[in-house]
Length: 357
Image 1 (cartoon, rainbow, N blue to C red):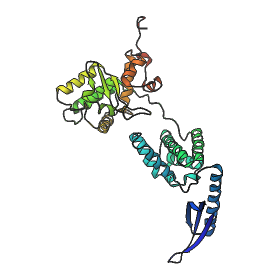
Image 2 (cartoon, rainbow, N blue to C red; image 1 turned 90 degrees about the vertical axis):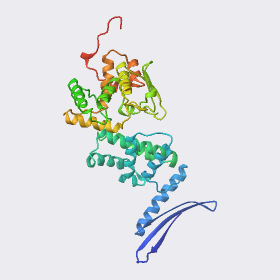
Image 3 (tube, rainbow, N blue to C red; image 1 turned 135 degrees about the vertical axis):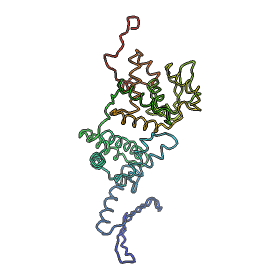
Image 4 (cartoon, one colour; image 1 turned 90 degrees about the horizontal axis):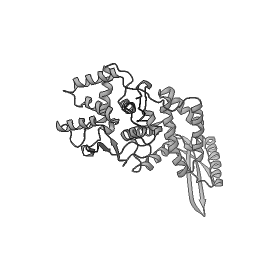
C-alpha cells in the first residue's frame, strides 16, 4: 500500500518521500504523501498511517488524510454562513482559535491532553479567565461535532469531552459567575449630574440614554436600533428586530412594554428634532465607551452599561410587577433566564395588600 522514494535535490540534499495509494477496481481512490529527511521517519509514518487506514476500512469509516483543527473550524464557519448570525464575541473567538498553535495540528491525532495543555496555556500565558477558556472549549466542541458528520471523527469529540471533564475538575475552566452589580443611588445621581453638564457639547445624549435604559431594560444595541416607526404610543409598546436569543437572532422581531416616562422621553426627542428614523441614532460601542469613561472619572468601580439592564429589571420587581409582567418589558422567555438579571434587596420588596395577593 505504501512506498518510499529517495530523492536528491540540486544542492545534494537527500529526502525520502513516503506515499500511500489505494485502488479499487483498478482505479485510484485515494492518495497521500509526505516527505522526510530520514528514511526511518518515512517508514514510521507509513506504518502508522497504514494502520489507521486499515482500521478505518475495517470499521467502515472514510479514509482521510491530513485534516487540521483549523480546517474543521473553517468548515464550521462555512456551514454557518448565511444561516446563523453569530455575535461579535463568538466571531472573534473563532477567528482567534484558527490562529492558535493547536489549530495547525492534525486533528486525527489530537488527544485530551492536547486540549488540556492548550487550556492551561490560555490561563497562564494569555491570562484568560476560566469562563473565557470554557468558551474556547465550547466553540471547539461545536466545530468538532461537524467533523463527526463530515469526516467521521467520533474520537475527536470523545477526546475533547474527556478534556473538558478534567479541566472542570481542575477548575481551569468554569461557568461565569453571576453578576449582581446594582446601580447605587449616589452613583446614579453622580452620573446624571456629570452627563447633564456634558450634554450641551457632547455628541451623544448620554443623560437621556441612561434614563431610557433604566426605564426600558433595553440593551445598548437595542437602544440604538429602536425605530421611531416601531413605537406605538397608544398601546405603550415598542417593536425590536433581531432581538438577542440563545438560538434565534436574525428575524426575531419582538414587542415589549414601555413605561409612560420612556414614551415621554421619546416624544421630547421628536419635538426637538433630535430623531430621524431611529430614536437614538448613535453607535452602541460609543455609548459603552462614554459610560465607561464617565465611571472612571467619577471613581465608580466595576459598573458596566449592561448593569443598567439588571438595575431596571430589579426595579420593576420592586414596584410590584409579577414575573410574567416583567418579562413583557425585558423579553425573557423563562424565569431561569430572567432571574439572572434580578437582584432584589429584601427591604425593597413591596408589601402587597390582601387584595393584591
